[in-house]
Amino acid sequence: MDTIPFSADALTLTANNIAIEPLLWPALTDRGLRVFLRRDDTVSPTYSGNKFYKLALNIDCALRKKAGAIVSFGGRYSNHIHALAALGHHYQVPTVGIIRGSEPGVLTPTLVDAQRWGMTLHFVSARAYRAADIGNLHHDLQHHYGSYYLLPEGGANLLGVKGCRAIATSTEHHFSGKPYSLCCAVGSGSTFAGIIAGAHRTQAHCLGFSVLKGEDTLSASVQAWLDELGCDSYQWQLINGHHHGGYAKISSTLREFMAEFEHREGMMIEPVYTAKMLWGIEALAKDGFWAPGSTIIAVHSGGLQGRRGYPELLT
Image 1 (tube, helix red, strand yellow):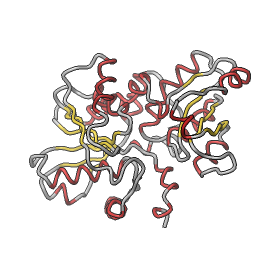
Image 2: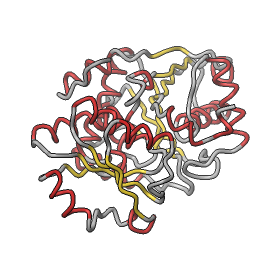
Image 3: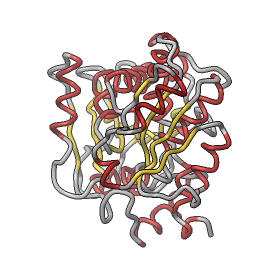
Image 4: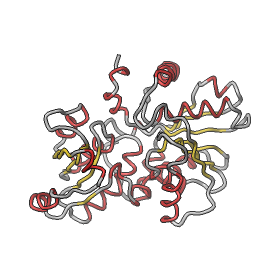
């Protein structure tokens, strides 16, 4: 896809073109379950998955405000930073990345890409990063760019949530009239909230698989976004306990699961989000969570560039 639609209607039209592919997956199909993968990883090689949906309306807003730059936050292998830099390059909008816990002379492949696309990188300590405050950079940014558009980490703001509604509305376009479970990985809760908000109230049961350690750390965040959007009476559930050690952690068991899945289905997944969601889906299926005949749709949220942070996945 060469152009990025910014209006909500155009965003949905683009989302409608994403393939929703049936999976072989004997652990589910042998139990009488119909299972599909929504291939949002195919939106673009450089700004794929949920990051595309979270950034589209934000970039539109920045362009309309004639912002001199878009400034945001991320880690050394951040999918958000990677996608923002790519889109900034595409639309000739200067971008600035506030990078957590790294040094200017030590660039990951993700940051090399971002810098090549013209993103200016500023490196801060983990403590300063947690404050989510650009601090002394404010005056420098104003001097270089004039007004700038400040975007939260991961694109997790209301426009980002609204953009993610297209994932659900376009899925309904493919499965009109048939009940299904719509599953996605959850890190901040903003993508999941957008999916819930865009889903059919009675047709879709939305399941979010937390990638964070700890029990029920994200329900309040999801509900806060839904309250801000004025959504109520939606069917959704947060699933915990499938994090494999915590955010961005990967176990040998998960690596084996990924290798088997990729060999069987003929596609790549990444370990931080999609793999953990798929692991959780299989675990629920084995526990009899779904009745035979049920339809399950999982969202592949992209981020394959982040695999470069896991050398064990490159061999």
